Length: 86
Image 1 (cartoon, rainbow, N blue to C red):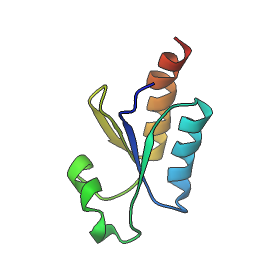
Image 2: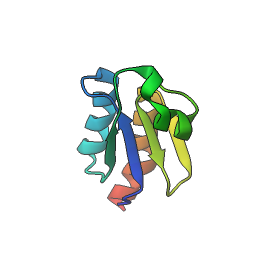
Image 3: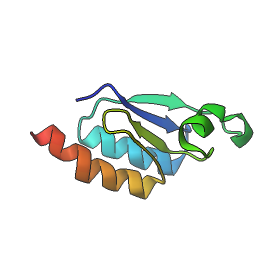
């Protein structure tokens, strides 16, 4: 799988953990970029996604950047899972 998956995440965030679990369950390779707890310091997340909330998934292979854990999990299951099975 691609090394171009990046998950912006906050330690202890249950929404972020939900996304980590989905990626791990599928055995996907991804990089986690841990962010600070203070929203105002999340400049890299703001730069890539236009907002400072996490989780944010960046899939460079497909040109996709998305937020909201439910949307990310759905994307992972519908788009990335078939690539793992292929």
